[in-house]
Image 1 (cartoon, rainbow, N blue to C red):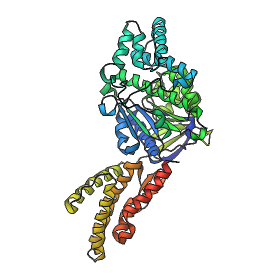
Image 2 (spheres, rainbow, N blue to C red; image 1 turned 90 degrees about the horizontal axis):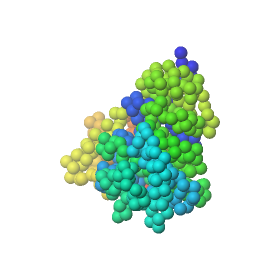
Image 3 (cartoon, rainbow, N blue to C red; image 1 turned 45 degrees about the vertical axis):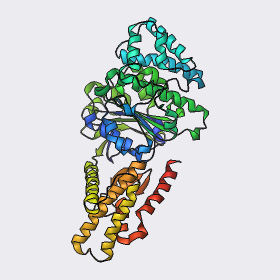
Image 4 (cartoon, helix red, strand yellow; image 1 turned 60 degrees about the vertical axis):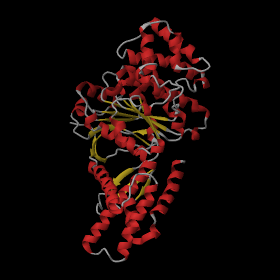
Length: 487
C-alpha cells in the first residue's frame, strides 16, 4: 500500500523560478509521460520569456518546440544541417580565470574519453599526452581544439580527435569563417539554444562529444559572469534530455554544486539511474531539490525509493499512466514526497489551432485575394479583412443565427492567426478556459506572463470597426512585450 499523499494536479506541473535554483531531475520513459511533461516545461519557459539551452540526443524534443520559439531569439545548432552550424570557440573566456582554464583542459580530455570509450578508460599515458596537448593548445594566441592535434603524437586517439573536429559532420564547427556561437549573449539576452543532436542522424560519438562540449562551454561562460553584479546575471535554464548519455561526473560534479551562483538552473531528464555511478547519483540526490519520477523498472525503482524516501520500490513500479511520485522544493524548503496524478492536457487544442491557421490562410486567399504569412505585415491584412466584415455588419447584412455563426467563425480563424503572428515574435502558450469554451474570451495566449485574447480582439474589430484597430492593438502589445522581455 502506498505511503504518500495522493492528489490531482493540472498539466503543466509548474515549479516557481525561485525554487528551480535547486534544479530539477525528471525520470521516466519517453512514452510514459516524461517527454510530454518536458515539452510543457519548455513551453512554459518560452511563454514567460525565460531563455534556455536544450541538449537533445533524440531530436524529438527540438522538433516539438522549435516552431513555438520566437524566431528572433532562436539559435539552432544542428550538425546535420549546414544552416544550423556555428563556430565553437571552446577556449573562449578561459583566460579570465586560472581555475576555469584548468577545468577546460581537464574536462576536455574527459569529454573525449566519454565519446570514444563510453564504457572504458584511457590509459595513463594517453591521459597525460592529451592533457599536455590540450594545455599547450589553450595557451596559444589563438587557441582552438583543432590545434590540439598538432601537439599529439600519432595514435588512435589522435586519429579519433581528427575525425571528430576536422572531418565528417564536425569539420565546419571549428571553421573560423563560421559565425561564432555566442553563449554569453544567449544567456544574457534570454535566447533559446536548441541543440539537435539526434543520434540517428549524426551518430552516437558526435552526439556525446558535441553535447558535452557545449555543456562544458556553458559552464565556462557562466563562470566568466562572476565579474558581473548578481542582479545583472540573467538566470538561464539548461535542459539535458536523455542525461544517461552525458553523465560525465568530471563535468557535472562542479556544475551541479555551483549552479546557483553561476545563474544556471539545471534540468536533467533520464530513463535510467541504475547505470549512473555512485558519485553521480550522490550528486543528483544530494543537490537536486525537485525530483519527479514516472513509472520505473525494478532496479531503478529500488534506487529511487532509497534516495527519495517515504515510498517503497513497488510504489514506483506500479505507477499508472500520467501518475508520478515527486519531491519538490517549495519556498526553498523541501516538501514531503507525494504521489500525484497529472490530468491529461487538451492535445486537441493545438490540432484545432493548426487547422484554423490553414483555414484562415485559405479563406483569405480564396475570398479576399490576400496572402497571409506570420510577419508583422499580416496584421494590417487581417485588419483589412476584419474591416470588410465590419462594413457588412454595419449595413445590416449579417442577421440571425447563421450570421452570428459566420462572424464567430471569422473571429476564431483570424484571431488564431493574429495570435500566431504574436507567438512567433515573442513566444507564448495557447490555453483554453474550459469553463466557458464557447466564449470569445475562452482562448488565451499567454506571453511572458501576460494574458492576451486575440480571438476576442478580432471579434471586437468586426463589431466596433476601426476604433478597435488590430494594427493599433499590435503596436501597443509590441511595446508591452518588448518592455517585459527587457526586464
